[in-house]
Length: 82
Image (cartoon, rainbow, N blue to C red; front, side, top):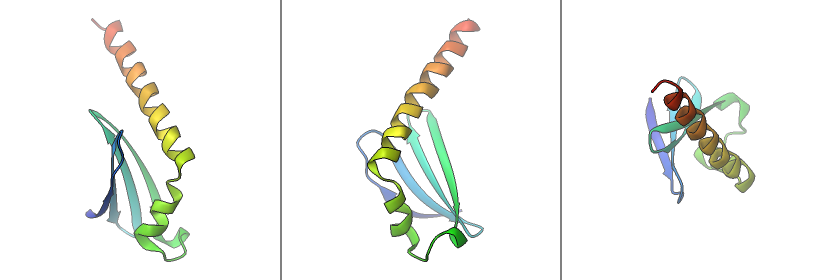
């Protein structure tokens, strides 16, 4: 897996990777992470810039909310087992 680029964001780290004709977009916040895979064949040849265009404000807001849900789910599971 090869790191292509990092995109600055105030709430999480965004890293773009390339592997086996796929782009992998990884979002990291603390101990949590989300990743999304896109086939290079599904894009029109714009490379990293095209992938970053897909990451619009609506999508990034969804990523933020998903991190909140993930954190709440994990915290609840942890409390159940203490």
